[in-house]
Length: 179
Image 1 (cartoon, rainbow, N blue to C red):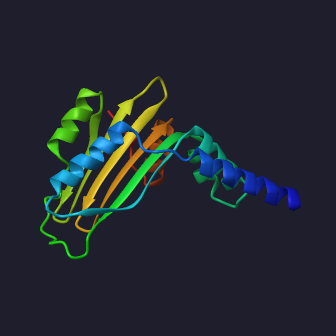
Image 2 (cartoon, one colour):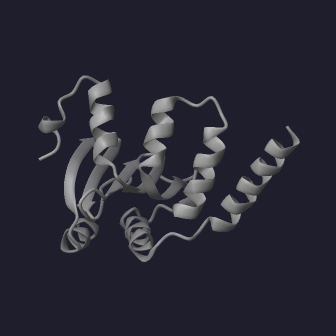
């Protein structure tokens, strides 16, 4: 038991020192969205980036828990995660332009990104983009603008199997979604 506690502390320490900053592309998206919603002000709730070292630490900690086997399997396929969650100031007028800036989409397309899914509702706008990085590696961006918050997520890894498994769990045919 004592060794298990030491191991858990070591993994936690390694995870903390391995946390990084978000990359240039992520920061550009963040700035563009903040400009798009002006005069409203977005406050950063949290923002982080996990690379391979930190994710290895997280996988080590998760393997010691009774987490769902599917979640453990899917976590093994992820090699990088960046997340930013931002909230609108409470005093802001809720009549905000909730669309992902066209300039962001165009810049990402020029870098090889493709729009996977768009969802537009009265109080929410979501765009999911993907980019193939190699034979089995995919990068996925999720940009979600809601009337109370904005969420930006990038996940990199062997995601095709993860997406297929998630669609299969929901009884959806992945050929209908992935071209």
